[in-house]
Amino acid sequence: MVSNDAIDAFAPVRVVERDEHVEVTLEGPRGPVEVWLRETYSEPIFTMCRAHAPDPVRQW
Image (tube, rainbow, N blue to C red; front, side, top):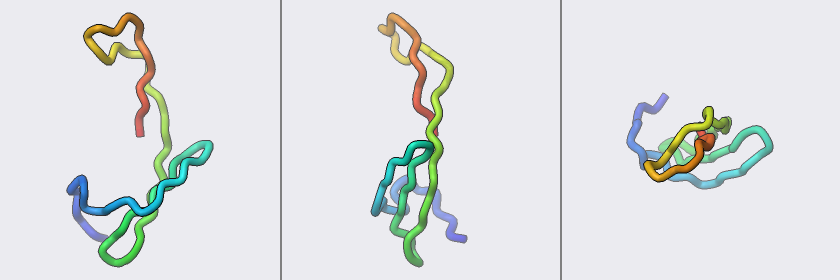
C-alpha cells in the first residue's frame, strides 16, 4: 500500500463514466491504480448566497 494523500500524487490516465459509477485509472508509482467512484446527490440545499431555490449537490 502506498501512502500519499497529496491531491496531485497520482495523475489521472483515464476516466470512464458508467451508469452507476465512474472508473478512474491513475498513474501510480508501481503501475496503474484503478478507482471506482459512486456518484450520489445530497438533499436539496442552498449552495450560494444568491440562490433562489435549493438544489441537490453532486457527492463522491
